[in-house]
Length: 123
Image 1 (cartoon, helix red, strand yellow):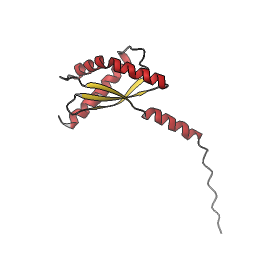
Image 2 (tube, helix red, strand yellow):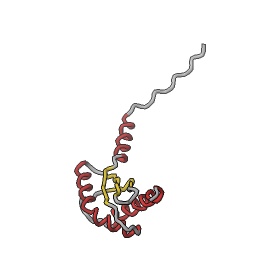
Image 3 (tube, rainbow, N blue to C red):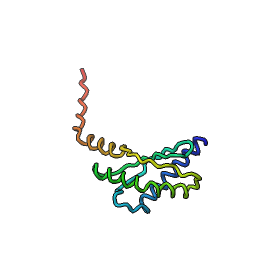
Image 4 (tube, helix red, strand yellow):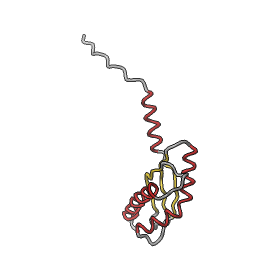
């Protein structure tokens, strides 16, 4: 399969998984989860699903457990909705980029304000 088709399917999977996690998956362990990116293999046998999870370390751990538990359902539904013959194995991975950007924003707020520029001294 060509790379363009794999990328298109990855984008469609990201949209479908995000919608299913918001509306259909009722596992109480799954908190506020956003699907940030999906990478699929060229033969569509597996998909790495990168998720961002808001909360403390325990909430992240529980959400990842809930996602792994729901992986079978999500796998079948994604294949059915996208019209795929084979359902890819889903592997959920934590994407720390959003949490990292929040942390960097907080650090930047702690920086002292810049010093005013000194006036030019004319001889």
